[in-house]
Image 1 (cartoon, rainbow, N blue to C red):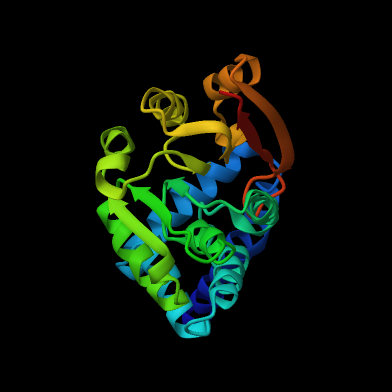
Image 2: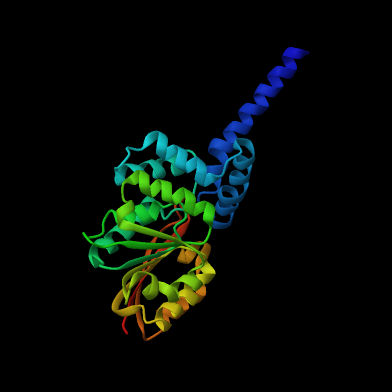
Amino acid sequence: MLLSFLALCCGGAAVLYVLYSWLIPAAVQYNAWWALLWHDTIVERALNILTRSTRPQRLLRAVQKKAIKGDPQSVISTIDYFCRHSEWAMNVGDEKGAILDSVVCEVSPSTALELGTYCGYSTVRIARLLPPGTKLITLEFNPDYAAVARQIIEYSGLQDKICLVEGASGDLIPKMQELFGIKTFDFVFLDHWKDRYLPDIKLLEECQLLRKGSILLADNVICPGTPDYLEYVRNSPRYESKYFKSHLEYTKVEDGLEKSVFLG
């Protein structure tokens, strides 16, 4: 009887493991709603309870354990591996990251702004490509995310090229000139709350922080989606926009980046 019970328990555990590790992740790869529900709600909450830690903290531990300190590319690769093989996270990811890299290299900005630091993945990705003397200003509303991002930025060795500011983008954007002496930004990467994309670029316009030729690059414009932002930049005579089709980070769900050139 005991052996039967133990066999049943082992069999049940094996089934759950297969479901959790392979079947469900494979099944949600192509559906946006199910992918976000599984990865960003069910798995994250379960692991938070089981490990008594947060996803950003687990990601940080992976970097500290496996990445080469002072090597930004090693940090990026370690996070990508963690997100593909251990636990999904809402970074821009490796596939869209290659598009981000190409745009940053094309612009070679002397002033750069990131809206939404999260754990610092895209921050490190951008900063490693900036020309000498350029500093990336990155804004993060969540203090817990900011605490993890600071450690990942320092671990990558790029702390001298990055200034992380905690607070709401709507409060901080009007203070850019006062805090940093910034007149205009050459490059702006949007990857924060999706309902803030449109208000924040309008605020950048109002504060005259965009010049003719400034480049805006917006992530997740399809999934979860930013329809009001896309309608604005694609129809406003002040912008020339192009969509780069890709996939939601670490899945097969369609997503993409919208590159918009400010025409003045």
